[in-house]
Image 1 (cartoon, rainbow, N blue to C red):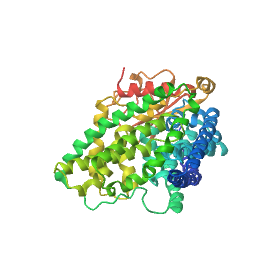
Image 2 (tube, rainbow, N blue to C red; image 1 turned 180 degrees about the vertical axis):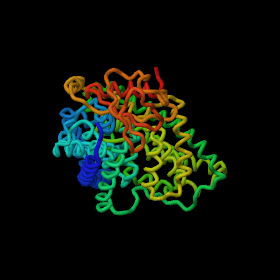
Image 3 (cartoon, one colour; image 1 turned 90 degrees about the vertical axis):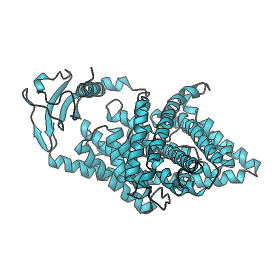
Image 4 (cartoon, rainbow, N blue to C red; image 1 turned 120 degrees about the vertical axis):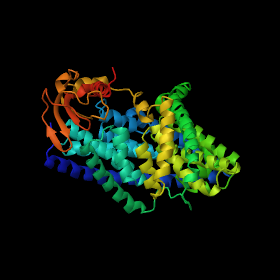
Length: 511
């Protein structure tokens, strides 16, 4: 099953449509959250001297928790960031009702993130975009397996692009973290969607970078050793973040509350936090931008990190609709600031480079937790609005990634996906439909340099094509597999995820 130029063009144009619609929806989502947060910050400040307002806020949070809990009970797949669900959907392990996801995630996300919980808008934005992609596929009758997944992937890219005004990172994230496949078809469609969505976001929010962290100097090469040390620290803290995040559902279960109503705990706790620290609540955009300007003591900075870390765990662990993307960047920025202050007090680094380390640490922390270093580097570059940091970003991200890898840390979204309740009835229902798998052959693969007849492919698949660059080969027994090839296989849709793992182990040489 191959794609003609006309089919590729049609998918790309549909990707543009997905990007435009996703851009509008995610921009509305982003705007609503930002303005809700401002309103709630004002209410928290006013509640300091008004007991009736405190009572009113408590009642409001209970109502919000019950309503969002109702949404979660009706549609459990809107829980959390939504990225693990999108990964499972693209892997053929899960099917969604796109309209049910779209409106419930939109409403539930605003109601959960708006009051100031330490949740990000980007995960929900990715799921909103994926739902749009699925909807466009179904409404245009382009809902056969591979085309549907391409549009879902492009919608996810558009969602991240509109959430952060980062079109290249949006496309890269889908390829590196969500789709796990650098397919040219997915790449060009995702890029078309990302750029289209970003145009909408730029029209609404302007050209200013999302995280315009002020800095005056580039980091001299003589201070690059700090990147190694900071990278190790970020890697260790990143592994701690992974462990804590994956442990939170078990901790919440100790409350004996039904899963769908556990969000009442962080929603009630945000009231005293908002009254005491209104400037430190929410996803953390403003904290990152102003971090170097706070000029606060090391002790207070450590307190800020503990506050953000603990309540981020509580917010996300409750299962409310909201992401961890921006909170991860926020925690990374705080770690960078703490490191700069400590090194300055030790006389090892001028404080002028604090802003630099804040920027670098954001990328490093996300690179090791999500295990998506390219996305981290590109995302922070686009969000900060400067290309001057590419080399230190790369060094720091690489070190942090290696540390987490040595500690056996898995990509956080993939680990969360493994904990989803996959509907086996769905897999049985779709098993009679054919689907398409595309896998790249890497340098050093165990099947590199072998003839097709000598490769023990799983019996559930049929190799139908091999792409070598832009050239398509019809596979025969004496066809030689080479590094850089892309294998195109047909498989039963219900067995897609299982067969994909078998093929990947075969290509990687894992018994």
